Image (cartoon, rainbow, N blue to C red; front, side):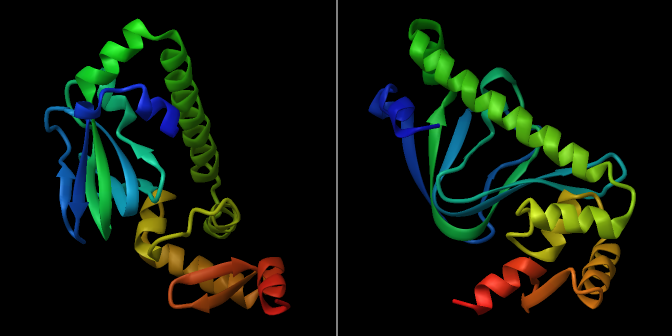
Length: 197
């Protein structure tokens, strides 16, 4: 959501929340109160499956909106946990619904945000449909999904942590990836560009 959209809302609709690592903004199945935007820091959205597994759905960083679906839902569908200290904005659900019903430009802009989210999730589904762990990891690294921990990355692309580490190691051994730090990997071409700077 751009600053223009936020500016269309009354000041009372937006509350700034300081965050520390481990802070829980909401839990799966809690009643919805609004959506959020990261000003600084990082928030990881994850869901616990019926089998008890944890899936990372999204990693929100500076400028990212999250929990947009909460505007149209009674309950949050995942947990939102701060993984880096900073600040988030809580944007009240009732204010958004009111603005959607009275401001066509706001409604169109908000619909555009939701459409981009759908595209992003569809792309992630394409990646998780790749059967080979190595090919899936390579596609996900290429798409920029390895921006947090390898554990988060593995759950986001629906691999076990062990399978993910094996695939990363194999891709490094094949020369397709290069490890640049603990839990940090880049494509071979990116590694060349970084070393030539």
